[in-house]
Length: 275
Image (cartoon, rainbow, N blue to C red; front, top):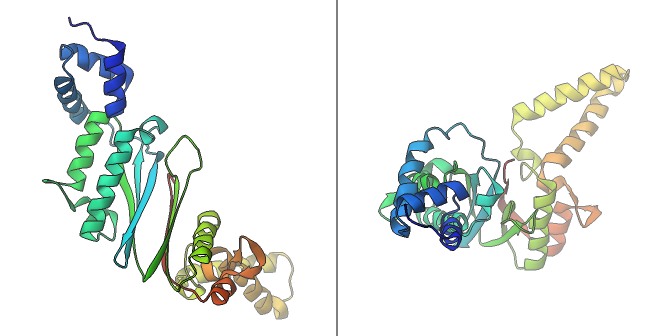
């Protein structure tokens, strides 16, 4: 049996993001040969991919890029924060993001089918998951088209890669205000751009709910329409970006801030790892 140094185990583990015991066993089986150990880990990992299919992937990172009027945001998920901060996992996200942008993929399904080298993104992820020994999945992909972009990536933990990502597509020239709006989106988590974008069934569900609440509070029937509309307004302020109170000055709405800066929003996307 070959003697395997702790330095070699550490080096291979940092290279691949694999567990200590698996890494040491692979190196021992390979007689200390790094390349053979990698193949052993890949083979054993491939056999374990199916077993990991139902595991939870609550860790990971977000990454974004923009070029030529197109911007893309991805969430690459894994099981543990150890893997999330591993250089190999981060490099994998960069490769996937590049492939997504090249294919102009608008969702995860299209992104997984995009070419990456002589494989697809899905095949590359499967191979990397086999080596890492964890479930890895491209959970979400967003595509925004606009003349200008502000990309904001936020770390919720200084030791981990970005966990919250925002792509704001806009028209205008005030980059500073655009960035502040992107930061606002990361905090406020709007679901839609304007109230007109909120699906009618969602509005009707909210309308029925606030009407029932108002009736149960004993509000007079004659006052119900006005009360319901007022509470619907609060709902729109919660879910629609343009109606939200600006995080830096709650006396202003986002629409007012945009108007003052001469900006208009073409679209946006926001991902938070695991959410």
